[in-house]
Length: 206
Image (cartoon, rainbow, N blue to C red; front, side, top):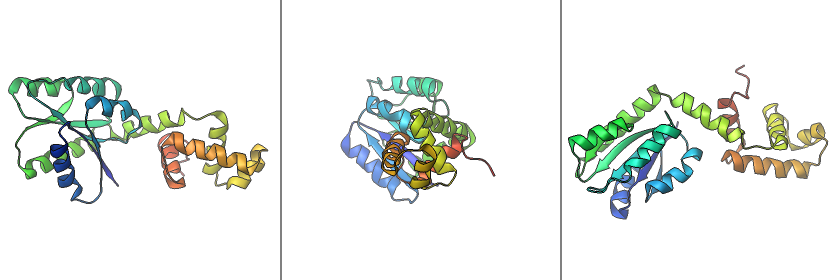
């Protein structure tokens, strides 16, 4: 199963360095952002994962990102703070806001990798399933009634023509609804559609 990592750092070189280090290991899907606001704009559509959030001393404005994550996406992301000016007070503030660790630059590669592993362990133990269920249900909630009907047909194992017969519409119309559905679910293939449907509780357990 893929591990999702999100890096927020306004310094291109530093962000690229962290990305290169983490991508050296297989199984990780990494996405970069220059600003915390950029991350928050799409956070609702992202898979649960680990957020590496850089805070530049003495301006720790991105601490607000933690507050938003804690309020809006509990259990969905574990957050490790990266900072050039760490302090006990900052660490306490970060933990209260929901971070699980704080690393002060410069740090050893092994230290970052260990923090990432610890973050994923916490994510697995504390709300990953609930977060995935919530994300799936939110995506399903975007669908129109017709798109949900097409999804139900897919869950039942019907091809486009079979769904068209059931709904008494053309196969071409089913294709349009299906394409719109996949866009709203943020998936690329039928397997991913079924994954979203499963976590949303739409697929029978047996």
